[in-house]
Amino acid sequence: MRAFGPAVAMTQPKGIYLLPNLLTTAALLAGFFSIITATRAVHQGVGLFETAAIAILVSGLFDGLDGRVARLTNTQSEFGAQYDSLSDVVAFGVAPAVLVFSWSLSALGKLGWVAAFIYVAGTALRLARFNVQREVVDSNYFVGLACPAAAYFLAAAVWTLVDSSIQGETVALTMVVLTAICGLLMVSSVPYPSFKNSDLKARVPLLAIMVVALVFAFISLDPPRVLFGLTALYLISGPVLWLKHRGKGGPEIDA
Image 1 (tube, rainbow, N blue to C red):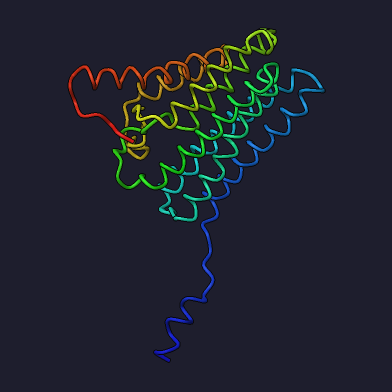
Image 2 (cartoon, one colour; image 1 turned 90 degrees about the vertical axis):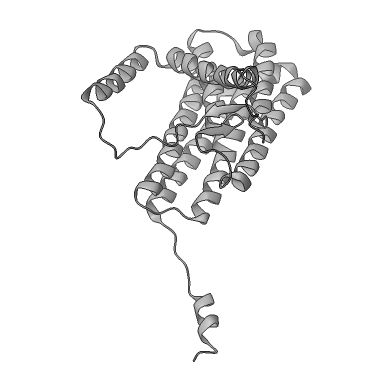
């Protein structure tokens, strides 16, 4: 029996945690829905571009929940981490690239799809680096722009411009630059605040809840423009933080 013990243990099926992986699947579904909707929008009307952009934002909400739920319920697993990264490639890599290309970058031909590919490649490389370094990097900072933040920025930009009745062809050169910059920032060594160490189980003053309520109210006034402004500020915060570290002569945060 002792001789057969290890073999029996190795053949026992291992299950996965349902709740966090269900949320990851929801994020993947929203990203896939965005891709389908963006491709349909080319022939069926610009209104679908807004739907595709919103789907990416919804995917980000589910992606933010799965990790926090896993930590709160102590259901983290290596399977969940790998599944989350594969979902992120679709939801925050392919989906934003297809959205921006379908709405704007296609007007520039090869230059447009090259910029879109730079973004997708940056997402994949960013996630690969994150997976191999997640145990050794400072949890207070991301090394490079996080994929959800880059996707949120592009999705909010498209949503804002479509809502303002701006044609994608007229801003194609600007979108090429922004898309490529997002891709390059993801693989850079620029530090970005991660907000990972916020304790959701800690007691907070009543005023803090009121501030959160006011933030939600502010966003509801004009969701596309407020989200675009917030994501743009976060995009800029990384280079500002990097320059601040270098200006003080502090240690660089390397990839």
